[in-house]
Each structure stands twice: as structure tokens, then as C-alpha cells.
Length: 76
Image 1 (cartoon, rainbow, N blue to C red):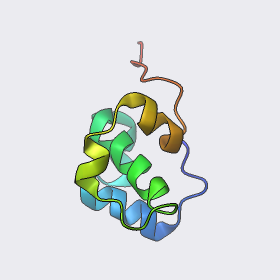
Image 2: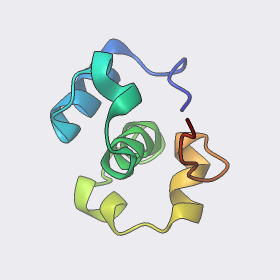
Image 3: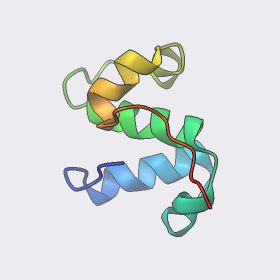
Image 4: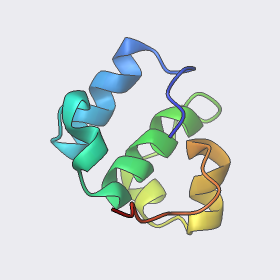
């Protein structure tokens, strides 16, 4: 997940939305985290966008803003 273009305020919003500290993102569930990253990115283009709207997006829409190719499971 690309976070280089996000502000600290954006990252704090992601933490609030997911309930997960940034330090724990690596091992956390990815659906809500990915949606939150897409939300803060997309809100830069559309400040009226709501969290509930983003939760209804399809993966294709999420990928445009979360900078993902597809969800991937981590293999051990």
C-alpha cells in the first residue's frame, strides 16, 4: 500500500477509521485498512465523499485510490 503521498492527518484518520495503529498495519486485516487508505486519498479529489460511500465501492474503484493491483495474501 502506498502511503508516501498521505499527510500525517490522513494517516491519523486511517488509524481512527480502522482502530489499528500504523505500527500494526502489516499484520492487520486488509479490507478496512485498504478502504480507509482509498478514502483519505479520494477525499482529496472529492471532499464531500463519505466513509460509507467508500465502503460500498468495488475493488476496482478502491484500487484507483489505494494504489493496489489486487489483494494478495501473504505467503509464509
